[in-house]
Length: 187
Image 1 (tube, one colour):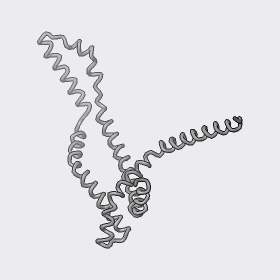
Image 2 (cartoon, helix red, strand yellow; image 1 turned 180 degrees about the vertical axis):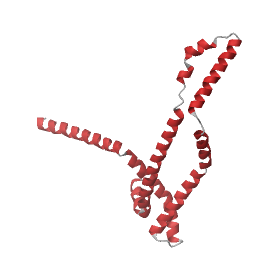
Image 3 (cartoon, one colour; image 1 turned 60 degrees about the vertical axis):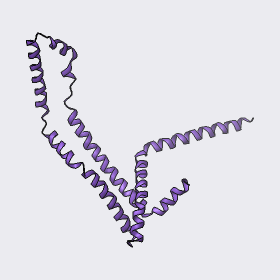
Image 4 (cartoon, helix red, strand yellow; image 1 turned 180 degrees about the horizontal axis):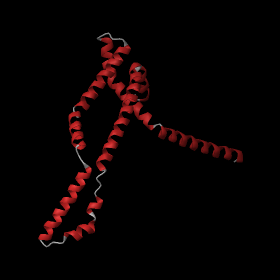
């Protein structure tokens, strides 16, 4: 074999591997956008029969049918979320009444009362509890951390929701084009 052919083969293999790595890196960086597009595609497939009904039976224009479909699907989502809002509000109210410093002092008072009871019974649990470091392992900041992460997740969810709605609008508006594209890949 010629050394030039071997060198070209090696360079071609390195180029292909580099291209694969770059494509995988690109997909890793835009994975949230790919998820938004996939969810919007599912929503557009769900909403297509509604659009066809609104366009053919009720004689809506395409844009009005798409907007009505998005409003219907969004109404269903809000209705499902609305079922859980009273429960979340009640739990939020209960958590807002929670005083973490008072809770910690109550736990320490309970600890002292338990020690006093066991002293009257001539049982030495104080040393075993001190050896286990039970109170030092309790983390009372877990509740505010949970609430902060919940609010952060809610913000990310709202950004995702509006992105999916935006992409879904255009998928629904040109749904026949999208359906033909899917049927090309899936027989």
